[in-house]
Image (tube, rainbow, N blue to C red; front, side):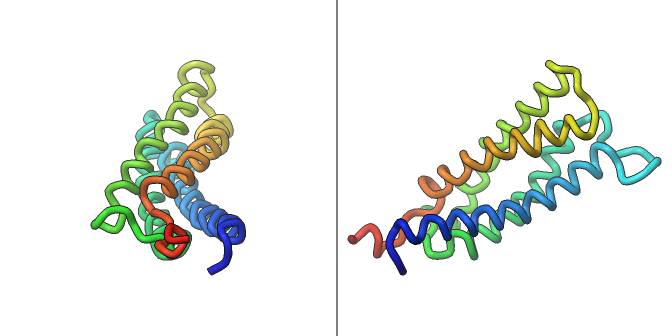
Amino acid sequence: MGTRGERLPAEVGRFLAVGGLATLVSLALFNALLHGPGDDGAPLADRPITAYVVANLVGMVVSYRGSRHWAFRHRPPVHADGGRTAFVAVNLATMLLPIACLWASRDLLGLADPLSDNVAANVVGLLLGTAARFWLFRAFVFRRPAAVLAA
């Protein structure tokens, strides 16, 4: 199984790959909902936070499947439900970081264009949320394998 020093980079890589896929899903849906695919307008053009939440709930499903079955497959879930409840709680809590960035960009700075929305929510907020989620998943959702704990 390798030493902890060997496992951490692989685990980080798998976590980032899963997160990348979930982010692509969320990013595409967020932009479609908020900025629209064409001239017909967007379904949530006047509700950026709602668009972000809806898009990221879909991304969360992708993220859970990838995290549970690939990124953290060697770590048993802490809870009997496979870690689903804790996973959702961590994701909802850390979703507040990009939402706050999007709110600040829109409401404090008055920036309401696609580039500003994406930089605030999907660059700055995403980086903050990803770092928080990785630590929280390892600490509270998927524990260390029993072999590591025994050593």
